[in-house]
Image (tube, rainbow, N blue to C red; front, side, top):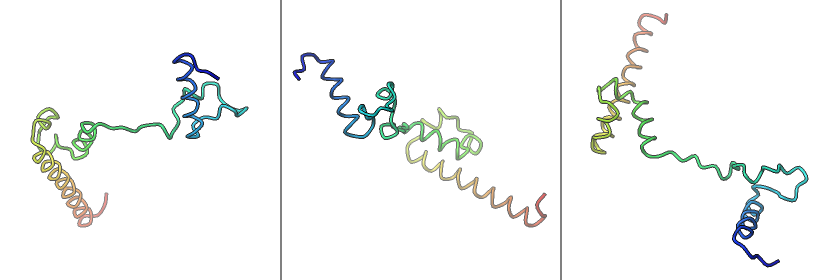
Length: 110
């Protein structure tokens, strides 16, 4: 078979890729006709940007509650300051949990 255009080459390479990695079996009678367009779990990228990861840490450590630093102000800090702030906020949360548990033991749980 002689490939004469780019579209046919792309289709054949895509089919070879799918079959080589077990993403889609074109020869199966149960094959979904839309299967080649679906995202296979092996191809799905759970990419999360560094800024998104930092936002999750900011929220998880309750930085705004402990320091009053807004997200924008937090981002303007140096990397070392950010890490120190996060560490202190996590530590403050852990201290608060210990204090609450101590009070519950002292006075009984409600």
